[in-house]
Length: 188
Image (cartoon, rainbow, N blue to C red; front, side):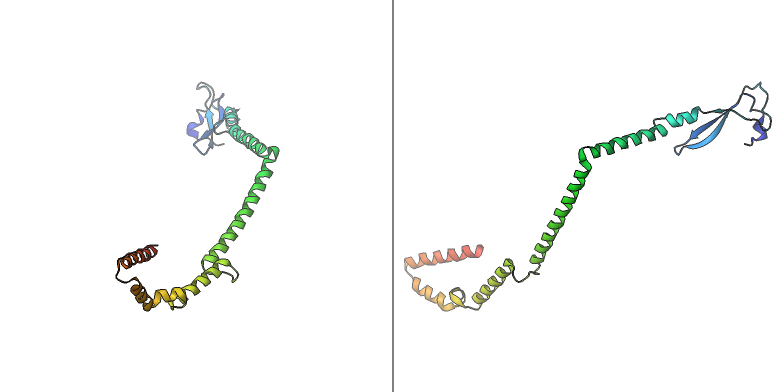
């Protein structure tokens, strides 16, 4: 390495080089520990001994050194070993496959149900048949067909009922009873 001539006189016999770590990213630099000030300055091409204590520290440091990486590898080995113990991994994978199949089946059933609710029913489904039958009955009632249709739509039935009930006390009670019955049905 080249040394600035302004500092070359400070590097004397007995100087030692260390590899040091700097900063959070672990940048490396060379640190020269000067020798005794009264010693002779090093000649051009001289060799300095290396103090490996910082490299050793890097390898054994539990906070950010290689030893921490080795500890992590050991912990990972223990974790993988415990997952594989007694076939746990195979059981877990089997359970996940079963859960996936059940989810697929459930989603298929849900799609079918939503199709039914949106009117995309095949002709043989009970729900569609019931809705078609109910629609047919309500159309007949609305047109005045059948007994119920005539009772609801024919004003003469109302008139006959009024005549039947008459003006007697019993008639007034019957009117109140019929009125309450109709109101109760309307509220439902």
